[in-house]
Image 1 (cartoon, helix red, strand yellow):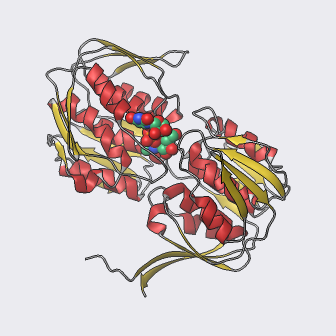
Image 2 (cartoon, rainbow, N blue to C red; image 1 turned 180 degrees about the horizontal axis):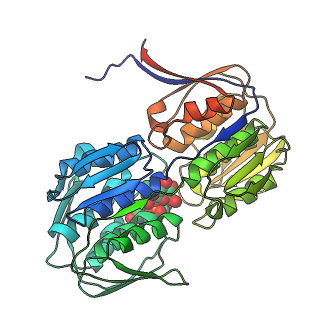
Length: 426
Ligand code: UD1
């Protein structure tokens, strides 16, 4: 039974510039759809350098629920899907994570039927699944939304031409997972172009899928009868790399990112440079000097890739509150992703939310206090603010942060930050 008095905190003593070297973990948003892809074969797939984070563990549990056998060897995750013929994801699991919904396409491809509760995930605004449902319907699935459940059935999925009316990472992945085993040719246009989509296609191609990503971003898939097991390395996480970059900027520190996916970070580095941050690349490393991060941003807008990622909007806000002057942030992907602002104000920042925009009056000193992480990236941003604040901050709800960061406390401690994970009871 859940202990109502349980403590789940990160305690941060702020006010020290970060310095040192950190290695970037594998990408959460690549690992999750690749795990779903493993379900499309009856063999044992392996994901090397897979991050050991709660969302991956949850996806692993769901796959086990469906009949897969799973095990870890260090950071390599093995998924034996010989008997993964289950067709039902209980609401208990689906409600805990957004990505569970993309298993629908994979289960349909494998078994012709699938049932799941509505997906949960971070509370960052409306997160409908209409595009997921539409793409499956276009490929021939019959979908019934029944109270709390989505029920999908199909004979054989059939290739189709599908135009996404809006860019959605998850719905694009859903479509790809369903189309690789469908009969005939599928062409998706209006697809999301995030790097995670390319990584998923690459992994599936390694399993025998026939996928071509055209220059205009459309994705052509020629369905195949069967896929064999997959094997591949999960790339480093661009959002984790960006989080640590922002932490260096907020504390005016100087750090080295050992293996960041630099080619996927153009928009992130551009924003960081506009703040006054400096960085240069040596081999695969990124040398980050945040000492001169002191310029407010006239307008920071999030956008679909290759734009500035919504997942780094909160970490960027945590930096901007430390920079004197007025900065403006417009969140264009998830309308309600400004929850962090009230916690930053509680720490001493001045931020107004008006007309769908955050207006940050930066430079007011932040002071340590008790705050609460309400979702994954907002939680990481609180850690950044706490590192920049005077005194001790206790961040509650650190389980949200652990959904996406494998060892944020250890990583930032290695960079000279003072962080302690506190688990116990009151
Ligand atoms: C993924 C990422 C998440 C990131 C987001 C946007 C994973 C596991 N998560 O989430 O970290 O913040 O992309 O880059 O990869 N939408 C609809 N109908 C749908 C689906 C989405 O209207 O059926 C809308 C959403 O409300 C949102 C926009 O489309 O406004 C983009 O969402 P989407 O790209 O689907 O995000 P996720 O795949 O959930």
